[in-house]
Length: 485
Ligand SMILES: Nc1ncnc2c1ncn2[C@@H]1O[C@H](COP(=O)(O)OP(=O)(O)OP(=O)(O)O)[C@@H](O)[C@H]1O
Image (tube, rainbow, N blue to C red; front, side, top):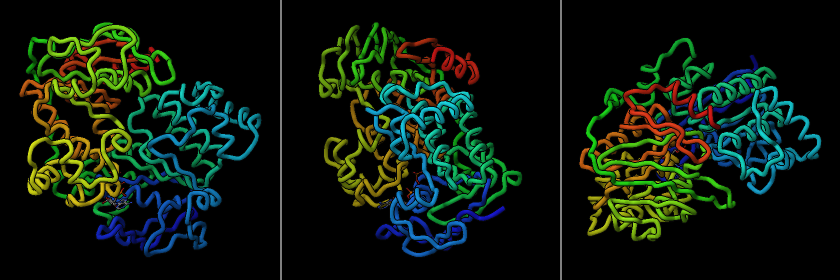
């Protein structure tokens, strides 16, 4: 098998942080190379160097045996390197076909026939002539996948794209990656999920604190070995999650037949009713784009209800402002910390101070940074310099505010590694045992099963089923999620 990419002794520093410390990785033709590592270990930095977003401070990149200098993604694209980011890079107002045509610089008619054939081949039923804003997150990622296949890449980088897709959709995605492999291309597959890495990848490279710990062949490793490689001795402390059974009998939140329209005036939440009791953890699971974001924003007060009522702690808050809802004890953790919940131009210290009332000393901030496991342990660092997972942990400072009665958390662990996710779920459990109610809106069914008292399945803005988490299993929930989609 030929070598597509030879990354030799790559060093990348950001000020005093060494994001990549002498990392050498080869990527072969027709292989899927996994990239695993805890938050802040250097995965995205490595991917961005291959995609021309960052240039290395030291080291050499060779593509097909020739030394290259990638100074932008268009340099990378010319060499056949394509990346699917965690957030779809599509223009919402254009159709899927127009987006693909623009990326490939070819005519719309030529794109349509080919794209349709590829989507049929993969068993993906997407209307490629719809504007992208009408597609769900999953459908958008499939458009990215079709776009990547049509670009005939030599190297495809997939950055945590599949984390929350339901099993059957994920399998279609994996099949597509194997198809890309068949043409001789290599794939770099970044994921936080160790079992997924074992399932999909031929080899798995593990990074820790910017250093390459090792590259393992699929057949030679198991979950425990990879966990140890990722976290070192800390792997021993990753808690087993367990289901709690303490729930109050007083509804903290009553959603009474609420309907909410999205920014495109489409009905996103459709006549939805649900109660969350005092101290209860209720999860809402569903495929992304089924009204979850609008539901969260509607409860937090960012967007108005078209119909229905929200009763919080006995009071109708349907017309109350965001500020009034916060004062009453509602906290919202949005799913996109970059856009909605962390001021990236401010320092970590300033972000933490902003969300915690009263006098907060520098030492207090250090304590929170430690408790949240934010890396690097430097309150003076500007937030934009943090890795995705560490930015997400910063947004979770809201969990430490006073006076909380209800938390609405939307995919709060999406970017977190296993140890950090366990820390957040432990915090949720602790808060609920103090009577705080939690509405966890997540696409991670295992997470929902591990922590919730009840699980509701959402599809097309409606609750399709509600289960006690002790009476339900993953397969049934996945079936229900896709049945109505
Ligand atoms: N633009 C930047 N400026 C300063 N520091 C940065 C920048 N980008 C990344 N870093 C730092 O480099 C280190 C590695 O970050 P990177 O984003 O590669 O981690 P990661 O493994 O992808 O993490 P995650 O799983 O959280 O996405 C982190 O300490 C991060 O704070």
